[in-house]
Image (cartoon, rainbow, N blue to C red; front, top):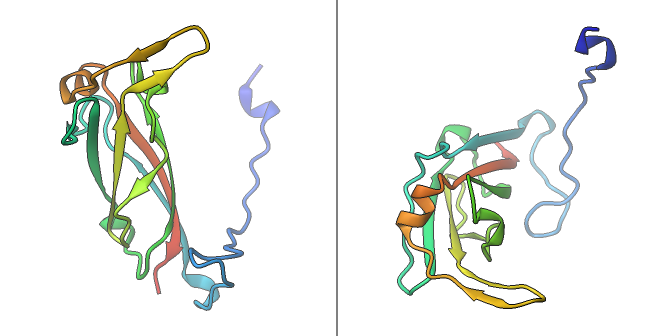
Length: 139
C-alpha cells in the first residue's frame, strides 16, 4: 500500500494568540511567519561555556527576516548524551536575528548522580545539533 493512502494533508492558518509580552499582537494579519531550521547534524559549532561541564552555541535566524523578537522553541539532536543535558530548551540572548543555547552536563538519576564535564569535543563527537522553530512577524 502507498503511504499517501493513509495521509491527509491539511493546510491551515498559523495564529499568534499572545506575543512575548503576553499581549494580543498588533501586527497586520499577513505578516505572521513560521520559520525553522537545523544547525547541522555534526556541523554545529559548540564552544566552551566558561566553566567545566558547560557548552554553548549560537543560532543565526536572520534569514527569517523577523522585524521583532519571535517566539522560539528548540530541541537537541545527536548520537548520544544529548538527552541528558540540562538547559536544552532554555533560550538565551534572543533577538530578532539570533539566540544562544547553553547546555550543562550534570544529570541526576534516581539511582545515582552522574557529573559529566561536557566539553565541546563531546558535543561535536556526539554530533549534537539544534532543531528550532520560530514564530514571529515580518512586517
